[in-house]
Amino acid sequence: MKKILSHRLYFNSNDKEWLIFIHGIGGNSTTFHRQLKAFKAHFNILMPDLRGHGLSQGLAEPENSKYSLDLISEDVFRLMDHHHIQKSNFIGCSFGASLIRIMESSQPERFKSIVMTGAVLRIKTSIYLIFKLGKLLSPYINNHLLYTVVAYFIMPYSNHKESRRMFIEGSKLIARNEYRSWLGILDEIKHRMDELFLESFISDSVLLISGNEDHVFLKDCLRYCTIHESIQLVILQNCGHVSSIEKYDKFNNLALDFIQKEEIRNGTQ
Image 1: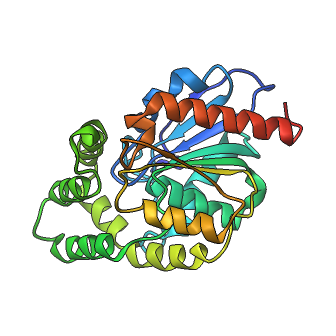
Image 2: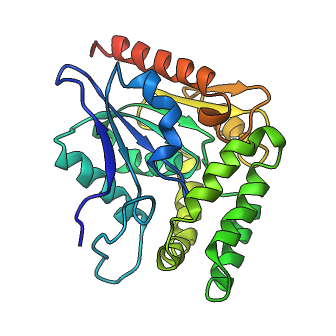
């Protein structure tokens, strides 16, 4: 059994800060291939495949054989420890943003700055019910079918095609048992994100980048930033759920500028 997540690592020098990319459910580390050129000259980069995604297969199962948010979070923290990364900047996409939110609430000392694309700050009832139905039907249907339905629901327009394609293709790599294990934490994810929605990030260096066509999650981002005024939000026009793919040049410029300014503000550059 493997002990750490499969990952891509690009190391420059000990003088460079770390930047860790966390993909969403159904994705993998290749989700961020459009970010590599823009960021790898400035940071040491770590791109993990979350448990059961990409090449992160065959990891040791928990004692009760059930997945949890603590388990998924610990996978990433263990990988950081493996590479002696005490503290890092983070970029998260979709559920990857949710996972970063949950991780930061438990070990805030490991976070320097946070950038989120297509942030899922709460699980809407519509998405929850789709996945709940998928869980009930999981013994009878191909898991790829559920991911396809969700992809078209979240990213319905023609300009979302590439994001949708990557999501659907990535889901083909997820084994049926992993699919069911991830669906098993659906209730925990919804409960935890509902709780955290009422709280601000512990870090004061957080940027959300959303598309104006992210019809499922944008309203919650707007509401969250109204409640918690320290959180910055940029909305890109003619863009859907995954701005790091659809508007990658703008996303890269915004994210790089934000992280570098935060490094200067915090005296780490």
